[in-house]
Image 1 (cartoon, rainbow, N blue to C red):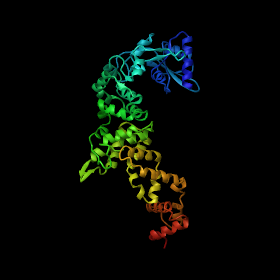
Image 2 (spheres, one colour):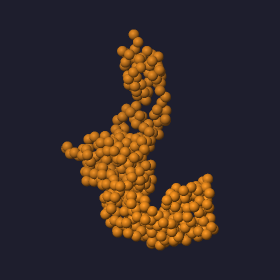
Image 3 (tube, rainbow, N blue to C red):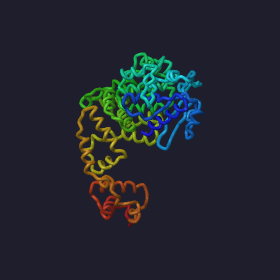
Image 4 (cartoon, rainbow, N blue to C red):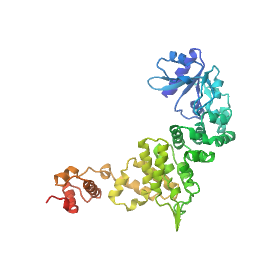
Length: 439
């Protein structure tokens, strides 16, 4: 791995120059757990200017905090000077930092014991001053020092604790858990972008169901996603949903996610978000209009969390189309083919599969669609047009809004095999829209 090799080189060079240098944080945690780290971070007693001197191709990414980015052609690593922090005044950053010579001081400012380990990658030696190795062995997420203070320093740590517990399958140590509950309202002060990224990771890194159960248990869900929290206790028709209420159904769906795309994960979470406001009982439980309500609610959530337009449109499409699978056996060929050629259709199909497995477990419609996808080539789903607007003008038709209706009808006929040539298409048009013909 290029980043690991670069980290080893940087540590070796720092030590050769007379400095302390260790791998630190999440990469050490992941290495000890036998998983592949995404990034490699280094902590050292070398000051930023000294790091810049030793690594001329580096650049400062956090000068105030003593962070230098060292890079080569293939990879980059962050190198941070040991430091202690003054009080945090904005729920995110300390008001001032002090460079330190002792790595123990650097560890004490960090969030959780499992992220407070240092490692020498050259020898495998681990420096543990906060009991992180024991917590790793026991599967515990525990704040370093006073949990309440840690969460008041950086409010995003409330979500990070949930993410680590969910992804790693760990328990949150009771005092730390109680501190999350006591401070959960602080999360409202965190920027939408930072919240979005943590929620994305909870949904996509593994353990999504556990993550959302913990969000609910700590009170964070009601602050961040009240529309999702509203699913709890909303009953569903037992003939279609023997598993229970909308919240239980959604948790069962999240449980099946295996490192999904972000859009699919949010589609899974929000596909039934329109059910609570549309719940009514008339002979049986009904959710009339829940798809449309769900798209509106999801739009508000996604805008609030500042998703990109592309992601927002895809997630809304997943929600808006998820009930169409129940009709696939009765769709005209043209309707079915238009459905199957939706952008990112594999995500629509996977959401349907997960939806079924989290409820009645009947995959008949899923298998039918899979069969049709195997039968149809790309040309079957979206054949080249046999009639264009230019053809209509040449045939004497005047451009206008009717063109869209005509071209759509001809494409439907083409998809259904009723026309296959330009001549057949024009005959169809002249028969259905004779008043538009010349003379």
